[in-house]
Length: 407
Image (cartoon, rainbow, N blue to C red; front, side, top):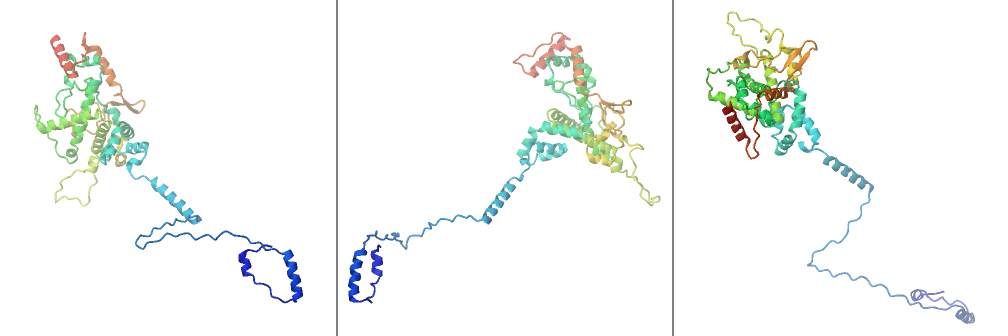
């Protein structure tokens, strides 16, 4: 049995209750059986020396945050993460949508609406400029499926091959086309050095300029105000500025599909305004005070049988689907502003087939056919080639001078 010094100090000696003889014998026996062992234990650990704190120095909190392992807290954190992920996926800007979806949205708008959308900011304008061809194609196929086949664009002179250029610049051909390029009062003459002067391109140029001029005077026709007439042989400044502006728009439409779609939109509005004019703007009949009727008369219709059977519901769709119905063909171009008073719907380059009961469009491919015809008949015997160091304008001037002296 082993006792440590600490325990030995705390144990008190047993009380003496036995006799002295017995005591002596017990002591002798105990000395033989019990032995005391002294174990030297290690000294007690000294307490850590705490740093002496100075009352003048600021206290620094060195405690660490306890780890939070609550299930409720984990659920709240997961819910907050889902909420943040959901809010980050929301579209905050028009341009945040995918490019395909943006193009689909813009393809359902009118050309005038697309122009207003392009004024939002520079990024939107740049996106519309880069995707102008696709957007304009979607618009024309949805809204102006008939008009785009009736009013094709003229072809630029630079896109024609060299052999055809020589034939188009032939003075004999230019003299023949003088009847189509004569100075109309409402159309600016075509520049043969900038635009192809084949018969189909001449007709396309005149038609688009007439469309813009006819749309310009719709206010006069709606309010029954006379259109200003020009004296024979005169061309005042306001008319020259108007025709120049229309010519610039047509030239821009040759390189901008959205501008071309805007011209078709204006002509569709002109057709609807003409066919529904007396419904929207009933005539004001002066009534004498002695024969004033007791009830208001109903508005008169445009004609007993309205052309294309157009209604306000057709106008609300804002497309040219109603032009596919049976109606009157347009074979003659309005060569004077006097024709605007009796012009109902100018839709050229098509004819009605009684056998198939549908419209037949013949403007497609007319440019290639007419250009081939002109090249076969008016190509010079030896057409000079354009020198590599010579500009296009200098080549045209020299070629015309050579052809004039040769003829």
